[in-house]
Image 1 (tube, rainbow, N blue to C red):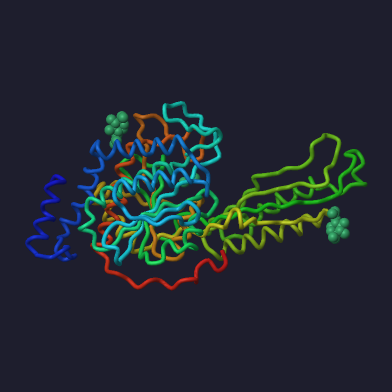
Image 2: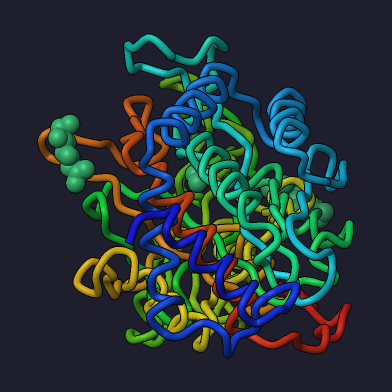
Length: 445
Ligand SMILES: *[C@@H]1O[C@H](CO)[C@@H](O)[C@H](O)[C@H]1NC(C)=O
Ligand SMILES: *[C@@H]1O[C@H](CO)[C@@H](O)[C@H](O)[C@H]1NC(C)=O
Ligand SMILES: [Zn+2]
Ligand SMILES: [Zn+2]
């Protein structure tokens, strides 16, 4: 069934039932299953797909780092104005919330992140980043374009929405915890559920992947200064060597995962930074080390944090050094575990399966990467999934955060149609729920 035919079907339903909007019971399971198919057809039309490509390229050319997405945010608001979509601004400095539908509950949110990375783009193409040292190397330009594409689809169907879709454009996903600030500013106050996605070069175009429960790890960063007493490298007895102490600290930290953690409870401790000394014949005064730690439960995460601090200070003291450890939570907030709601997983498999075929809705293993979408899943039911963009005939697509990262722009209609279908059918199929209690989240992470 073509899109226009489907619209007329909906119209006939309205007319024959003499209702201002149709209710859940007025749509058969077949009608519901048809929505994602029609939305994908619509999104693949040149009128919409080329518009999304254009948006994505404009944003790609003008990348902005976390909490500095002023032009990106302005651009998004201009597009929302063009479509006649109401919005609120600002949330968390540059964040924007758009609203489509009745303005009444239930509320369902679809989310895009807006920030780029401090990377110099190495891809030579017409729409290369115009800002030296900054690049959309994680695909957030595509994420914005997809939510705007979904907005266009949903705006066309605004009179059929049985509630309100909230478009969430948030700043600073890359380590800044923009999602947390959005929540602090009340962005999800009346929202019943939220969906988010990430482009992925691990899955083929036309496929999606996710899982129920924990999907992405909790993450934190640490930095430690290990102080000794510098001096002549040939007269060590008059020094306190922080290089040796720091080396032992690095080795001891490895035991946290290999000897203290349950082997079936995945965790990571990585020391990624080691700075000290500048000459071959001088023992320095101090060494700075730093790294990241990951876990899949709050308990394991808190235990790791506690032990990292303890191991660094105590191991340093074995070598007569002092150590100070900071976790720098103000700049790099700890990200909680991204946990997918069980019911939303079932719901997602239905909607995505109707659009892509069930064989293209893949179950995946959890990843040790992290996402600040996790802050949302701590307070309301949320669902995060990966959307494939691998297509061998178009060459290799690098993983995110590579200076050679490319987006396969064929993915844009899939993302837009999925966002729109998940939101629209959620409002049709789910009844309004009471708001969750506030202020109880993130007590320790
Ligand atoms: C470690 O701290 C103690 C107490 O402040 C101080 O007396 C000592 O000199 C420090 N040692 C080093 C190697 O910095
Ligand atoms: C993969 O890329 C080729 C070449 O651009 C294209 O013809 C084909 O349709 C793409 N496949 C999918 C599933 O999009
Ligand atoms: Zn990233
Ligand atoms: Zn990302």
